[in-house]
Image 1 (tube, rainbow over the protein chains, first blue to last red):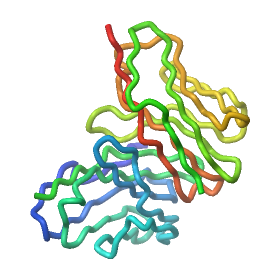
Image 2: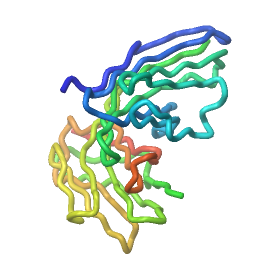
Image 3: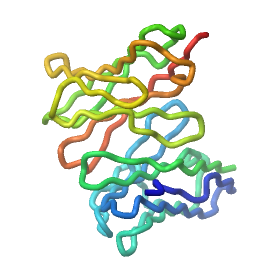
Image 4: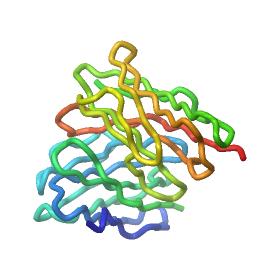
Length: 112
Length: 113
């Protein structure tokens, strides 16, 4: 059990650019979640996968955001045409069943 | 709809004193409840969870929490604070499906030597 990993850990980009983040869950976990966390706030749910199926999406997930989990393993979160308001920590979590989530270290995004 | 309220965005205690972090939830169905800790620039680490078994839940690092349905509360306590407990603490709730988790806004704990 190597834990949940996320790459990159930090990303600085210019407004209007596209960015992609990767999450590798704990290997046997069938559930994978993405959250956004801004300074001084708790994590806000973005989307959830069970295996390769994306089952829940938050209203926070605008059409500039897309997430995939091909083959039910790692997941990617892409933000197109980034805006300054997208600056945040993006957290990934995985779980087996729905009882508990295990979080990765996060990817901190700064949009200039 | 589910939500979590954490009373007190900042709590300061002296080293060795009791830690009490408050969490109230609203849920239309029996919930699962969690406490997570977050250190600067890190992800969240699970401290403890309530999943409809014993109402007094013991977690890691000497923390425990009690589920009180009548008060819709799940307060986190630790008898004696240690300097290493200084961190951000988040309460979270989900329903039994675990499809979505809802987090509170967090409580920053400062431990004064």
